[in-house]
Amino acid sequence: MKKLLALILAILTLVACFAGCAPKEATDLDYIKDKGTLVVGITDFAPMDYKNEQGEWIGFDADMAKLFAEKLGVKVEFTEIEWGNKAMELSGKSIDVVWNGMTLTNEVKESMDCSVAYCNNAQMVIVPADKADQYTTAESCKGLKFAVEGGSAGKDMAVANGYTYTEVADQATALMEVAAGTSDAAIIDSLMAGAMIGEGTGYSQLKGAVKLNSEEYGVGFRKGSNLVDEFNNFLSECKANGKLDEVAKTYGVQEALIK
Image 1 (cartoon, one colour):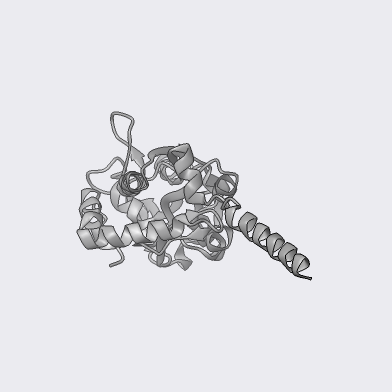
Image 2 (spheres, helix red, strand yellow; image 1 turned 120 degrees about the vertical axis):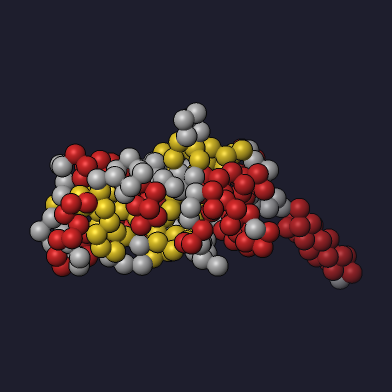
């Protein structure tokens, strides 16, 4: 009997040893650190992500992404994506985060894990400035032909309001369509409108007509990613030390920050 008990104890000890020595499953953070890069999925979207004259990606989101990568101890890499494919790009590991003035819609929250919100925004109807007075409500815009970014909150607003629309590659292209007269109007983010249209901009002939909603921006991560907590802690630190305000003021978005 004593020999049997001793054998059982030996087996249990061996099992406990194997269990304790089993390698831990790698986390998303481990994956990022092992490859040494944080790949950020973006579109050309001033003032959040756009290129300067030297071809470097800058903007409020781009600069914050650089700081986040620095905190993680990795390099940052920006990749332009088709916005409608963002969830697929993320889950397939073509990118590690979606960080591009992304509206926290129900669809987004279902397809990826999201950070806390960091910016307020709205979807805005953009029309030629000389016609803006004709369009003061969402209902008055129903006869217009819109250009909207595929997979965007702007497209969602077009659908919700029963508008006729054509999907284009990004919000910048939507503005180009209106400026060229190939579309009557566009629906873009109000933060982008503030940077891209009106006096002193490249689209001085365009004007914001109607705000269709109010919304919030967040950053998207893979389902189950422990980078979410890393980012939320990073954001809290940047709020506390003033870095968030500093970067926001560089690009004129400080009033949109969620305090």
